[in-house]
Length: 115
Length: 112
Picture 1 (cartoon, rainbow over the protein chains, first blue to last red):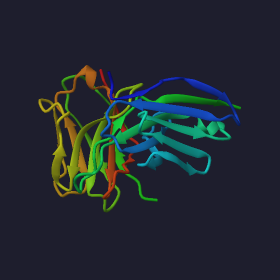
Picture 2 (cartoon, each protein chain N blue to C red):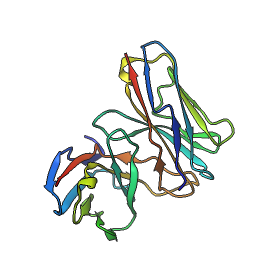
Picture 3 (tube, one colour):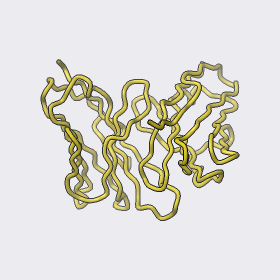
């Protein structure tokens, strides 16, 4: 079983709809959670970064973390065709040294927003 | 806006040949990572540097892969000899003091 599970999709929604993405994880040491967006043949782009349970909002994006259930979500409001991409969740344990920690990624969910 | 630079963007090679990828992190970022991403999967860490020192290379296939960051700035990842199963996207990322990692555009490797 993978440490981080993510539905591969594709998830197809009409323009303007809310996109709901989620990941589950098994390692209770994970304390930092990130969402990346990756367009085809491009590198991942950091969208959201959080380390506490609850919600964090940034424009049309809301990240939600439930550490008790080991479940994280990303919501995209008023979705646009330009939001069509693969969304990757990533997580890491707390920083215990000056160097960063390696990220453990989910497999990514492909999202298609149709005009 | 500062970005992670990688080259080449695409590389096609035959198996048993040697290939090398280059990465220039965001200026001032002490930590540099190399990840491999197989099509349809998430990235997996190959090696992590703090300045010029290797912090984690536990997932690097050391019989054929090598990585260096001699002056603690840019980095090179080498594969010799390349195998068919090495076909993937090779991503470089960098971070400063925190967990936020910023990725470059990647090098897409095809081994024939």
